[in-house]
Image 1: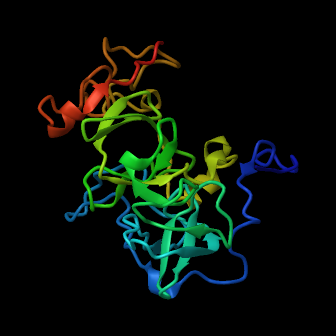
Image 2 (image 1 turned 30 degrees about the vertical axis):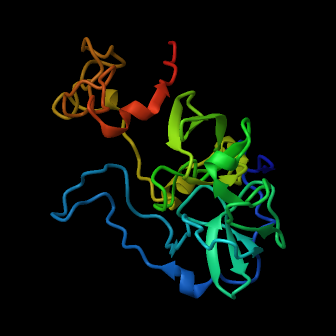
Length: 278
């Protein structure tokens, strides 16, 4: 973690992740880049459906190989790079057949490290194999939910899932939230955790840095007028004025269940996440 001297008020608590070990001087692979249009939270009719989005620095999307399905072909990490579209770092892997692909960089992997996707791959960070082979107690990331679909779980910076047991063709995984879920043992998973574990320790420091990230200002409901928000109005600082917490449109937000009661994957959840105590 990089800290700055308090030369200005905004610099006093300003922190950033160290990028010394990442790609420097060279540009990212042009064939693995594509432009993604920014809609600033607007739908096809031009109406804002997701608030507080817009602006930000220009960026290009890196095409990530979440499947990593080149079975038995060894690969070498050519470089570690920054990805503006995700919190984790990415790694450029060149395989023995000459193919180059971007993958999520595992924590501890460096330039020159060897990785492989194989049914008998050794249990080293970055290697990918079936969940049923990985020993109990190990940590994995980029885990598939459906075999062959590609990794969908544990893809953000520093995240990982812990293997608790193998039973009846399923593997029990413990989520960062504390939830325990069953996943088919045939699904692929990468050994280790995702890179950049210090991401959650970053202090933004100033408003301009947030605007550069494409995040627009958020106004408190209590600072609005009564016509704009249920919390608005009043002389000076006032109480909420409603029995239950509500959003801008008057819908109750606190304690409302959002998960569908008949969702197909309910039978896979063995233990729910713990509720936070106030």
